[in-house]
Length: 275
Image (cartoon, rainbow, N blue to C red; front, side, top):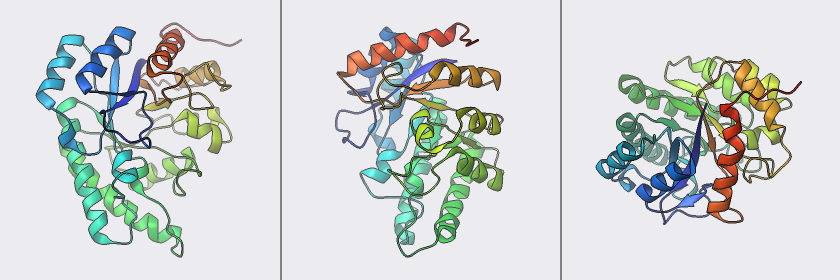
């Protein structure tokens, strides 16, 4: 498995759950020095990224951009797929398809997390779901010719009220049956919403494309109480060999959080086994 860390540009708002907020090339260089394999980019728009500069930085460091996340599209601009206003849904769709095109240049997956939206008061889950599936299908139409994977991230009920656990995310993947669509478990959200890490991960074993890691308190791994060794055992047993990317709070400082994360997770490059 490879190790990643989430980062955003210097103007990113507090709603972006990232460790580093800096110019992207500086972040990539620092993450490489610390021992990460890749940097996930939390973007508001595709235009934030100077692609030639970042490509040069990736080549120089041997780093990767494994994922582009879209949470700021929802949190900052209020654009999402379940919105009752068709114009806002279209704006969200246009933004995410722009991220898909960017991901094709970088070899990244696109996280369609909170941009899916919420179930509005007075509307049914079925109404919200129909809007969401329509937008997600149109994203898949754009992603598949480009070879880009879209990942669904279940998010806990305290942040959003739609697709909270892995079973619900898996059901969407199965229902649409699109080759570009996969699941992205997040251990922080799973700790709140999924009754069993083992059961949820095993049920989705053939569609997991990317994994977010944080401890129980959204701090760096090892600074909370999640049974991380047991979880990593399950991931190994189901054959997952992709990225474990840290989406952690920058506490006590970004540097200290990143150092703890890479130090703790480096253990997974060796066999981890609990008797």
